[in-house]
Length: 436
Ligand code: HSE
Image (cartoon, rainbow, N blue to C red):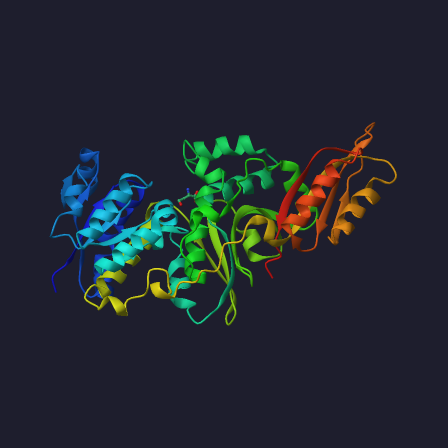
């Protein structure tokens, strides 16, 4: 059988990894795919570098349009990133009847519905294993491996940069700004790390997973996005004293009223396996009604780990290229005419437990005032920690862990607590998930 021809848009870190792994494991991959997969064309603005990386083994152009319109190309790999030119090229590739492989989580989370619709009309596949958690085959697991299950919740460490920062802050007691600088020097964080540290990258990935898990359209605009920039080293320390670690989690949950979709720093019990995922590693915990909890762990970024996911998609497409489109796995795991309109819930309606830290006067009655406010709003306390005031000080920190309640109750309680004369400044609120 003649090779399937691939056009690569962008030969940076992941593109060069894809080129190298495909070449190195060519024989194994062909034995699996049933025919050989050949990168026939590469488009990159830096043509010289692209030629060097591909050793003159394929055609190199600087205009990606030449790839997406080339009648000899069967599959286009989009590794440009962003929503601008990448979207135009993906749509053009689909219009020209090409299958598409992309690692572009931002593009899918924001324009996925439009892209999948166009692909369905054209009868081509759009595969995106590399878009979530790099080398971990989480899309395959959610779409196929867990297909018997009613998925109940997902909680993932799906941004390596922030996990590295949090691990270092905890390990070395350093503050956020110092570790961020270190992460940039080590090349983990981008020069502009905003998407990582503000939780946007994780929210893109959580949006994609929620869509596949619950059979809902992509709804990034409804996701709650909160990063780690405001996290204090003291909260990491206090959480540890209470038996918890703080991780930036991408969480989605199915409830009777709708879907919770949120990214925020989260306390999780230190005895959970996922609490011990350190450094730039990723992990995703998925709970299905039949299987229970399953955990997927691995490298969420990097040249060859991400190439591993890109090539898995290439092999899938190669195997199914000649199949009737109806016999392929649906883009979002559910048939496109069977997507659910279950709403994504506003944050006021989500239910979770909370960590509250407040700076208070160390005098009789303060704790009673605070706990009265919580009780009046039917918020039950799970644990408490009061620090000894420092030598000569008359103020101290109180930390309260609550049982589960609706977010709107906690917001109302905080508003009242902050008005107490004996409470100074703002109350710090973090969410807590038992993940049991
Ligand atoms: N910037 C991402 C991370 C990697 O830090 O995990 C690509 O998704």
